[in-house]
Length: 314
Image 1 (spheres, one colour):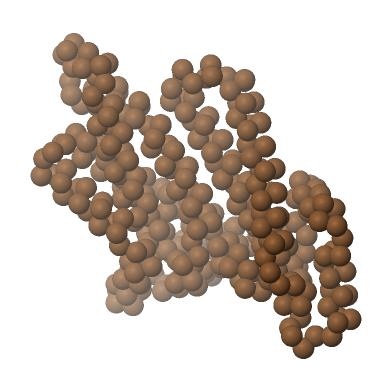
Image 2 (image 1 turned 180 degrees about the horizontal axis):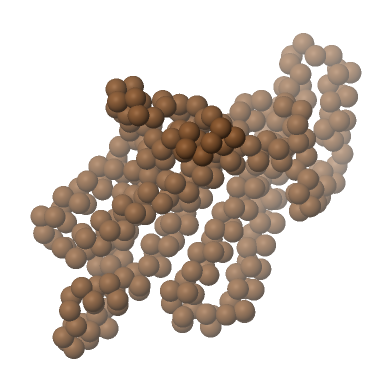
């Protein structure tokens, strides 16, 4: 098990280093002078040269990359030139919104999708299976921002149960903050639940055709025990894979939903930093998101070993 963990950890570190090179290189080849764009077209050459010196843009590319990566390793993400605050403070404020939102959405989608997938697989080819998978297909097809607007109209405008947008912050209490995240989480959870339900159903159907399932049935085990004890555990690996990918998406890919509900999350921060050409914010936040994806994938790999002990020896 130790060898398995060390191998996955080594792969994660190499992936992170390679990703840092790509992120840094892509932002460096983007056309336009960041200093000139930040100061405006009417800025003097002296002001532009001073800002380039302050941002370290006059240093060689390799020196800037090593300095940036070294600061990232020790937790120094630099200072935003747009907001004039440390990037780490910006990220901490936005993570307090994006992380709970992603966790709530993932929990909601899992609580809905896994039972629906199991229900549909157990009734393969029947009317209930057709209805469940048809509904899941509709959930995949419906844009989440359109669904979000419908939720706002019903629960915020018509019923007045939750706020239509904005985030009051955690300092005002947990319940007001959670109320502000409920509708965005539901809007994000719908398409993810639809995808996860279809994957759960497919994985269970594939496992139910294996020889060991037929052997369990031949021994006279009840259908429920065969499904829950033998089939479900062996079908969890693709389900866990999708869960890991969905969490990474929910953490970083919620720009549209955050704009619909006026939430100050990480996705909105990256979008604003790109439009303002604040390179240090873009580089640091993207790398943090890449690191979070790698950590989630590492946890998923470890969960594989917990589900299937045969993987621990690889």
